[in-house]
Amino acid sequence: MSSEPPSPGHWAFGKSARIPARRSDLREHAGETGCLLYDPTRGTTLMLTDTAYNVWRNCDGVRTPEELALIQTAAFEVEYAAALDHVEQLVVKFGDSGLLEV
Image (cartoon, rainbow, N blue to C red; front, side, top):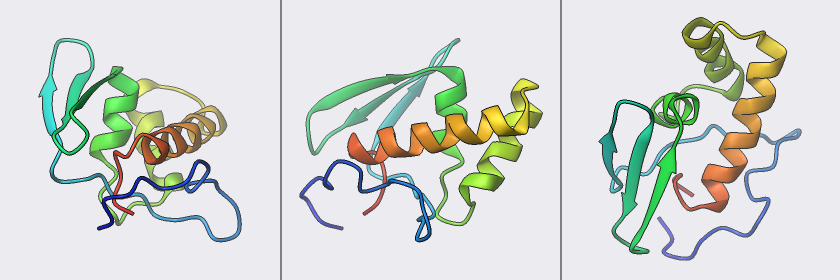
């Protein structure tokens, strides 16, 4: 894994969409609502909402964004199209924030 953060938009979706995998070195502290993620490499802490945390913890390097959206529809009773849009936005944000393997 590179220590350099990916360029903005590295996780943009299109014909060559990548399967997201969360970084295993991040420390997480789940609360009643959401989760705090500490990045020891960057020395930063990020707060995720419940929905964002559910996506992040399921970014296992195996599930596609479409599969992640199906998980969201079951967990939060949302329409698939809305869930997929949200998942795609979150994966881009996670990638740009250095939360995913490169």
